[in-house]
Image (cartoon, rainbow, N blue to C red; front, side, top):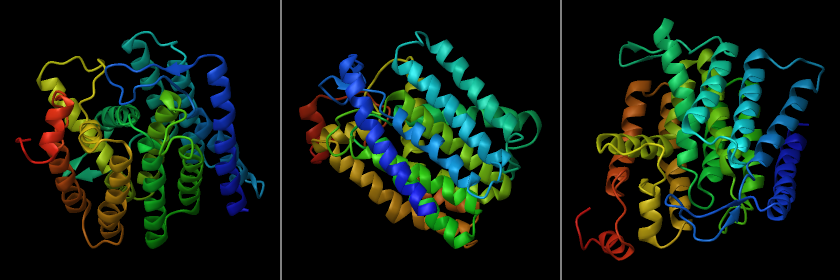
Length: 354
């Protein structure tokens, strides 16, 4: 039954993406290249709605297979994902015309997630409690909103966002097998990976449709809520997820920090993420997307396993996992202004300092 549902989620996502692409072409729902874009041709956008609908339609069937109700924590994940996908789709349609209205909608979704999940899990990092009282509420809200936005920021080249979801979820499935996570959590990870893979076939190596905000908001919000739910069972599980998402977290956070220091407008379009610098220097999207997948499997998954099996503490595992990622982001100039194509290529060959 589980395998049938996972196959159904994959097929549903693939076929719905195909149908939505035809819809977007007919009604001219294009992503037009701008200052942030890493593409040069108008491309249909909003295909990530297929990922959301595949998960939201198929996941309840697994819980209902024996006539059981959906547990509150997993209902919270699905409801939160539905909200973020909806506001993301409205964003794709151009409904949100201001940054403020977009942020208000995101904080509403974050508040919904925390209220349904009973707040932030009781987690402690380097002796600092992050889940108690008002501190927990503030941390939880910022965590959820940042997860949505960082995933949106990192959705800029072919296949990166969808294959990140696939590799992160598969990696966490391996961790769940080793550390005996709840079967409901494992299924949610599996169905998210299956639906993302169905869409990825349309987005990598050549992008025939973009997932848009409906997809990136859904993936960021769903993963964020899912990890909070897991953290209530075992705080280390939340840290395992944070390790697996390390590439996205370090690139987006360092880029944001550097732009803040320079006084840049955070809502202004740009191409200053490390992955964007790398794609220009390496001459394409495919090497960068595949490199991120390799990092997830070869470096971050072993670190998550060391944490899940108790060999390393959360503090040590997260710190060790993130140091090379931070150095890599610094090497690829995360958050620094874009260089000319010729100069950036020279930098990649080692002819100018980075």
